[in-house]
Length: 349
Image (tube, rainbow, N blue to C red; front, side, top):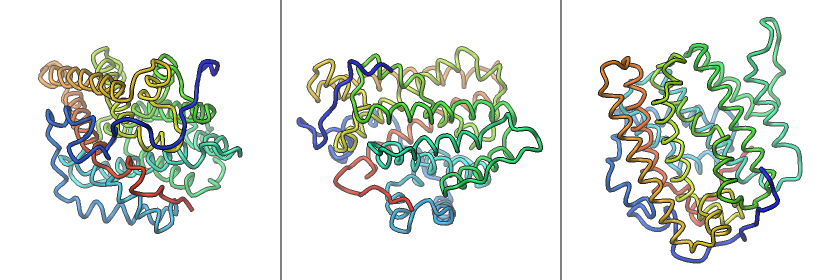
């Protein structure tokens, strides 16, 4: 990404009407979308899932006690319970939920802990995690012992996932997670600068975060789609809509928290800084884009789900992606994670 045209968004509360969850209980900029979609029902064993995953999180050593409590207050486990409320309790549900938690912790490192950090800790961590994914290791080769709690948790979770999946899923998830790591490093190198709209869209297209989320949905349902279906143009189009919807809705809801820390890699920031749109107009434009992508996502998924020529695992996959998107939209609109004044950042060890 070229750095020449980027500008910086000042840290602190932005001017204009509030954007994000703190805009009120009605859903703020996502209110129009939330009125259209039901919040998926929670898992019937949600309390047991929360207890099990809270125990796992404490055992990883990723966060101290206070940091663990802060993370849990952001309702990630309620999100998982609603994303996969139709699944039986078991290793698929448990492992997918662990990936959600680990992903949010990694995002916190990239977005806040490492933002502006002059050390090479982010680069070293990315290299270490990428090495743990390496499929090119010889059968008798031994990967280096993880040096951090983050790497140890990642290695164990990856090993658990390998035991539940086939080679096609592992190859896709490896590639997507490496894209996520590399694109997150690219963001760090911007040091809080605001990309232009084309730069932002190009960067998001290269990022792998939402593709990793789609892979987690596949893992939770133990689907392991064959490549000929995964790369079918209709599924590629559907995942593109999913990617846009999730990414842009996240930008809407995280805007206040991100701008409070000088974080400029956000579509609203790009529209404000480079397109000179007022904040309310930028938010309305992104909300309209989200609405269009949600409509198309649901339309495409419904067509595939009703198509008798599609195998059952593909029909299950598209329904599961839509349910995940619905649950995520409701969570984004209400979580304290995106209220900069409400909950401090979870503290790592």
